[in-house]
Length: 366
Image 1 (cartoon, helix red, strand yellow):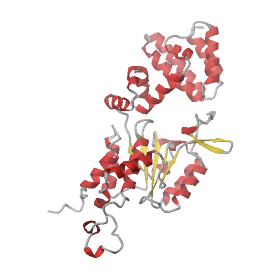
Image 2 (image 1 turned 30 degrees about the horizontal axis):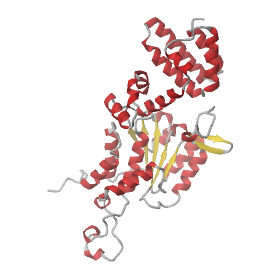
Image 3 (image 1 turned 135 degrees about the vertical axis):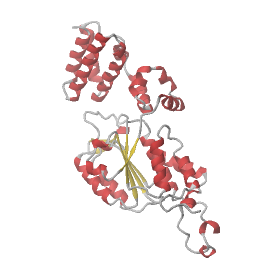
């Protein structure tokens, strides 16, 4: 008995391929299901919006989805009569691969494709991230620290990068059936860059664009309306622990403050763990007790303002808030309020040294 026309035909080989490609993704069943259904039903959108916090698997899922989309174009197992269709196809132009044909890919081939995508070594994948403009050159956010970039202003996805996307999409795909473009920190686009990307989304051609952002509210509504939204959730404690153990970061679970700050994001927990190890002992001491004298308060304030970037100073304030949350209520409330005020002042570009001097003196009781 045939299925009603309204129901999609389930393709077991294609489902198996999707499961293989998404195997590294943990704790995001809704996102994986939506993307798998899009491929199985041959309803791949020209643009997707991956929403959710940093470090919960959005970028990893984007790479896995690219692996799946690129796997659909691999021509393995299409040379035999049963795969080409009728005998008349032999010796003629190969038949267009069906979903089942494209799913019949040896695992080593998919694994090799996954490695290439992980290494950004595929000609049909373009990975775009927010960047800094340094002496006329764009330095990606992931390379800023190694390049010694002073991050006085936030990184952005800039108009030249959007133009690069247009040029990238203007040529035909070289190996895969389509291009894939991923934009990390999509919320950092300025108005000119966003409007340029909007034109690209109107006619993407043989391409799928994936925008990563914490919330759709941080993007132009016209951009959001052209994307299919894929929501990502914060991970439960068990999944968080599983990922940290798998990545060799299980020791972080012994620091309840870092785990609380991560709020279900293993990426945040790992980044915070690496950062806290780089902090000077005098700064870490603030997690236990406030300065004991005005001189000590002013010395620490000078140290923080000179050695830490503004965003690092705000991270330190968040960390101190979590550490001192265990204090008795009256003392805790006073400390957290002062630290929150300091964060607000730093975000409003008040002179950092002055902010820290006043805050630490008040916390020390002076």
